[in-house]
Structures are given as structure tokens and as C-alpha cells.
Length: 200
Image (cartoon, rainbow, N blue to C red):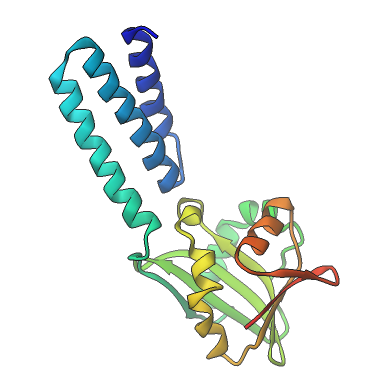
């Protein structure tokens, strides 16, 4: 492969990274692009290109470690289901929500809601209906930039204390599309009688 082709590939990767809405994908593609630019710089004997892109690669690795490591500040706070902020949040993202959960509707019977946060900023929401010690989840939505942050894995792993402290011993939800079902299985839910269940 000629140096010129390597340069074009590196440029294409950097441009592609800027189109990503996911922070992890942006950083990953940018990392590959910067490493490719290092190779290009070495092939044409340009130390400024090598040094600059080696530094960019290190920066991308640093941020990816932070993004994928366990130092993220993830949170889940109970919030009234009719809180204006939450209602506006759901309505603003309703189009995207119904892509994954086409049958979504706001809970009406004994509603329970959590505002999910990442580094102190709103990152998603969980809505459901309380039925004794079960929470029937009707919405579990994380904003696109935070989907690779493993917020769901945290919520249904170490973060389940927020459900237990609210009196829940079991989480139940209806499967949405194939992507939603795969997500539920990945975070620990198991299929049972047409629903997905997580024992706490």
C-alpha cells in the first residue's frame, strides 16, 4: 500500500470519527485514525505528523480508559413520574424511544421513575409501575452518547441497590425489538413466559 493511500485512509477515519454520536465509537475510530497517521508519517519521513498523531493516540487511549473503566460517576435517583423535567425529557426523546420499545406508554398505576445520570448530567430514565415488590418497567432509555458507558450494566449490577431500597425484589419488562432484547439479556434479565425478569 502506497503512503498516499495510507494518508487517505487515515484522513477518512478521522472524518468518520467526527460523525459518531457515541463517545466510545468516536474515540475508538479517532484512535485508529491517529495510529494510521503515525504509520503515514513514518512512511513519508515526517516527524511532526508522527509526534502529533502519537500524542492524539495517547489522548484517545486515556479517554477510552476513563469511558470504559470503573471511574465513571454513574447514578440513579428516584424522581416523581410527573416531574416536569422528566415529562419533557421523555417527550423530547419519544421518537427514539419508540424505535426500541414501540409499545411504550407512560405508567399510570402507582408509577416509579429513576433519572439516570453520568458525571452529574442526565443520561437516561427508567419508568415503571409498582406491583407489590415487583417493578414492571415500561421504559429503560439511555441517551445515545452514553450507551457505550455501560450505564445499564451498572444499574442492573452494582446499582440495583436503588431498586432494593425502594422495596423491589423483582424487575419485569416486556421485550422490545431485537436490539432491546439483546440489551436485556446482556444486563442480566432472563426470558420467562414472554417477559424478561431480573431477580434482585
